[in-house]
Image 1 (tube, helix red, strand yellow):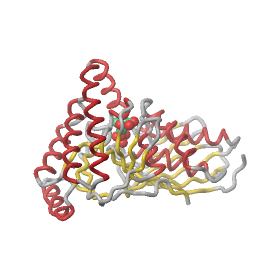
Image 2: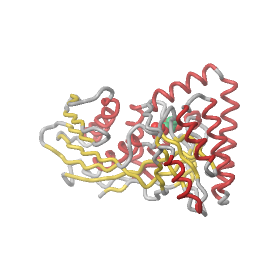
Image 3: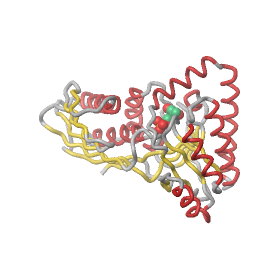
Length: 327
Ligand code: PMV
């Protein structure tokens, strides 16, 4: 298929996992929401046959490649950019296109803190590059994005790419039908960044090891995670924020049990609860990264002030219902 335009832009939202991270990899449900923080991508065809990726994900790296040669590249950066390179290559070759592409990535969220920046990057790039050839549908964008996310960590549940592509608040089970959830209340959610970077791949592997060594216990914990998710679904639908907060705390305990929390995470979770949050937990892979807290609306500003007094930056977030946008 030949190109219909020579440049395109797309953006895709970051996400939070409200319930069920890690257990979702083992076919348990999870509840996720996309948030009003985005990754923006611009792509331009070039005639050099090189794929050049520039990003403001903390650093400006430049990747020039027909074979992925890394320029000015910090250690481990190839882990971030190689899947993106593979993704672009695969779209170009499926369309018999021999040209190169320049890609610029601009992010409103830090990388590696559990907010799905790599998935959002895969989704936005997949949408932008595909749109050079034809109007892509969301299912196609999702399928390509999730393939490349699985280069980053092979056991990915696909949840991050799904929520970033379609947006909203969803009940997700790997490879199964998904349900959009309607919440009668606007949840007052904040994210607090521990400022400790994590690697999703290594945390998913460490849980795998834990599961292999503790099969019976892990099964029990999975059952509890399942029950929490079902109760949370009901609490969201009925607007019971107090119950939802308690369930977040219970979910956090399970994540501590499987060893993916961190003392800084626990410190912030406790701080949020002590200051009046309905509930708080780590979100994403853990081991650092971010925590989310659900706050009573009328006390939101006071609680944020208290958390910030302790030296932590709070990011209030809204649920984004749009998913990927292609311009
Ligand atoms: O930390 P993140 O944003 O990469 O989230 C990972 C979520 C996991 O459940 C731990 C893994 C997955 O593939 O669902």
